[in-house]
Length: 419
Image (tube, helix red, strand yellow):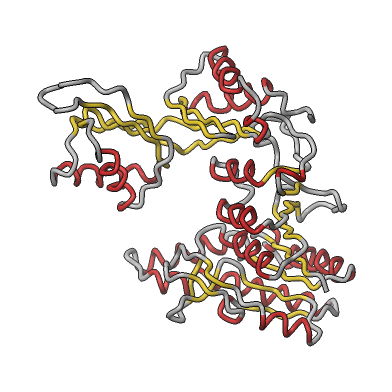
């Protein structure tokens, strides 16, 4: 039988009624002739509650025990989903990560999937099981300890299962009905996309779009897994939702596919640092060792022969999430105190936001950057930092102008219209 993977997020299984609704969707696919692998998240809010219990019990917690606690929410949902399907006379059973077994690295709280052997589940399909309900987000380390894949890890679980089993498609059911050209809460003209390329979705996910976890899109792109994002709260048709697929599967597309934003950004600048080989490695190696996720990086023009610095000095600016600023400040201060880094001062701004335009059409279209900068200029929005890639342009701006920038760019690139 062909295999279909269906993933239900926390809001889709938040109550018993919602689990029943999700189970009915699974039953429809079973009736079409599929063997179905259902990946479930914990009920909405459950993981946060469990994380709170751990932090209250042990502020400097053992990550192995953290995983044992926070992974339990998915076990509950998987069991309830299997029971619900059995009540519908659909042959189903639940699977925890260790029973598959889903093998991961030993990086507790942020493990990566190493292998998903298919033999156990395939054997049960052969014995008449129609639905395998798998607890998402969790696996087992080589040492035999429960691991978790990081927040949003159930998306990654679903895509990995689709790849391992050669699934026809991986359907991600969530509380939105697809991928939009931008956040509909900010721009009422936002339009749902019927299809979007893997590369575009990966950029949007990494730039702040919360629809899919970045690692899940990376996996889907690597293994050519067709992803469909759907709402678990609306009636579905075969054309519902947004299909995330190869660029070749999209006949026509706008130059820009979407506008993304990240509100919780900070800008940090190391002022007057030596401009010499290895200085960037020293700075960003220090930050990486401290677990700081650096994004945009800009090095200013060097000022030659300043205060005896051979080769001159420069300023180095980078962005990072606001909640990592304290960690970054401590790491850089420690490096300065030890003599590893020499700089005059560290300037931090936490009132900035990142706004980006994304589109595979930008590869072959000139003038996108010029148009973007002109639009922001017309709105009197100052650009503080710019970074680009082949299909993306990102700018750092003052946070109070973020929504205005998103709306203006959405209008300028006519994203409310189909190509």
